[in-house]
Length: 601
Image (cartoon, rainbow, N blue to C red; front, side):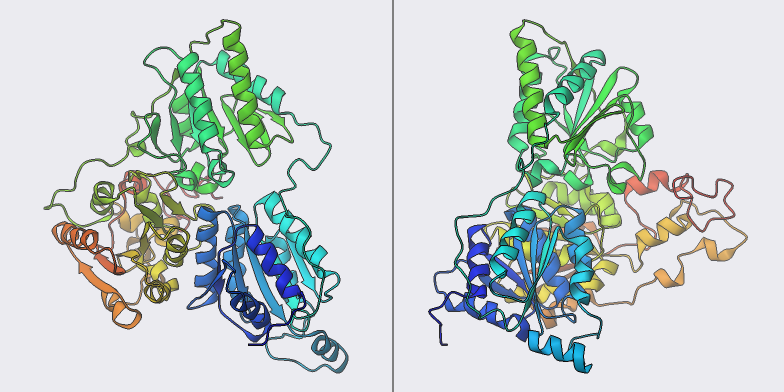
């Protein structure tokens, strides 16, 4: 391969990616990005590894999971036919604040001019001008179309700075004839733009108001949110909690913390103050805090999954996230989470220095069984289902495992699993794109080669991205994919009509409402045999006893990847769903006296 001595746009982007810590790229190669990939390959000293994937969606979800754990990742695709497939994955990264660089090659300037003037439609083009960049602008914090090498360094630097500042994806669209054009070399290193304004932070008044509310309502529980992980603030959060408990709480009544689906395992669940992974619906929050308690959310998002699609803000809540703080109904703007934690700690230290003791106490969630973690081992005689499987997982998971769980019933059931390690649980719990987990397992193992990715996915979601198993085998990974096979799109059925999951079902006059809808039935796959084509070990499990046998086999085999098909009844659901099935009202249950569901219509 001939290597030019000149410094090119491809060189520039490569160096900037290396400087911010990118060590792996995911994608599907195309000629429009070949110059960049060739430049990376030609540099024997570059830390960047180029990983090919089965398809763009698998690449996108792998990159997302990698960035959640390592801080940043990059994707490469070709124009339109590759990029269009990534809209879903980049949107998820945008919503869940995951920094990913999407690099899209584009036709040359010459081809673009001919297309405009002569109407010639080149391969992978629609005829609509700049369709790719227009598509990605709403789901990135910066989108740059690079058509001139002299401008390229400024565009690249501006976009990467935006990504580091906002912790969200960016998009580069680079004309094919620009990659090898000369440009200036990078100057210095890039960093976050946080603090790059003259706006006065309201961190101190927000912290003072928060502490005053906790003083007036002396029972508290903290909600550890996803931003603690995104911004690396877990230890600062624990320092705050430790100081409050060591200095300002009544003896033996320490303040504990909960997490939710999006933030599960941001703090290790073996921590002495961990209370459980919860869904904080409004009624449950009201019951928990009462009149004299406060829920203190630190970096927690009020997403549909975490709060049951309900607004939980009240005079008894403190919610710090998204660069601002709500103390009751009062909003404090321009407050970074780190500044708020620091200001709260300073406020509590100042109170202690004045020899004041607040005599705070902690709230407990044990009265609600849905908050409890599973800890007891499944009986071998118990039928195989969601609860018996996740109970087994609570016993089996180790600190060397990272569990990634898909949307739907698996995510609901997994909230009760005890995860022993910090950042040992990954889920796309806000965007909720089914199929995320299988390729995410690929990215997790790439991020931490000394860990083992444990994927839990429903069979419907597995149908979406099962090709990622081929990536895992090709990379020599020992990833384990547990496919909970009930033969239906369970969560979709539950949302529109939960009647088939009731024990017993209501006998509606409209017989269509008494069974799973035909369009929610899945094709019958021999899932355990998919490894015959993709590589790895396949196992089929129909009982709890068989499950424990397979778990022992997997733990003893540190080298192979596995796909384990778990065959469960069609009407089996996690306990958290079962206890609500009788009172839940589906969108289609027009014969139900409580229809329409207030939370939806």
